[in-house]
Image 1 (cartoon, helix red, strand yellow):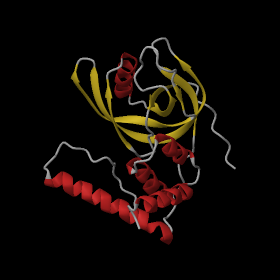
Image 2 (cartoon, rainbow, N blue to C red; image 1 turned 90 degrees about the horizontal axis):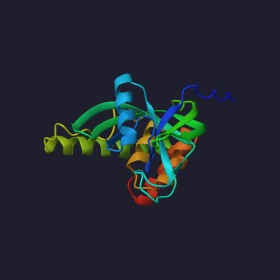
Image 3 (tube, rainbow, N blue to C red; image 1 turned 90 degrees about the vertical axis):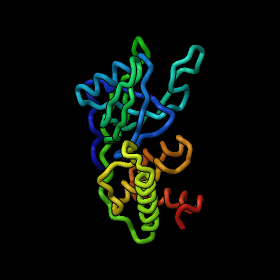
Image 4 (cartoon, rainbow, N blue to C red; image 1 turned 180 degrees about the vertical axis):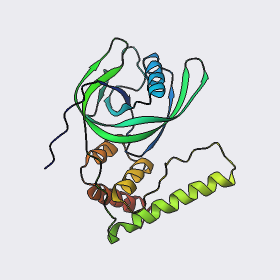
Length: 217
């Protein structure tokens, strides 16, 4: 069994959200809270990632009288791929998910920004899709082709498809992660799928969800 990585010595800034970011995933964000504006500017200038974690209590935007923020112990690094500042006090970014991490300890700073000591979780092992799960990959490819065709027909040249290349329709973890992003399931369920060590098990569970919804027979 591989030994866990030691926690990072530099605290990782966290962005608690009501959703889950998967490795290789696409995430657009509109930033307007003061606690995140400086963080995102610094990350963009330095090229350093921040951590996306799924909220288990509280809300994305700080409000007086709201419940204290609590979040999952496992999150995903996010690296900024696109950055715009359409007006003062507003940032629009697109991020791509990196590797997963596990939180050892966290602390909230003076202006509400969370930071954490984390350890990296090993990336999914590349694993070919078994024959009995190929329908999940085929359905995902049809969905991506449909989205690309719709984008082309509408001449929406500035529109970013909600999935990054390179596509890996032959890999268990990649296909499972993309379906986890597309499927209309609760954040708690997505979080449980994110935390699974086995990409094959993740894809098997996704396949069950696809069959239940009738998306892939």
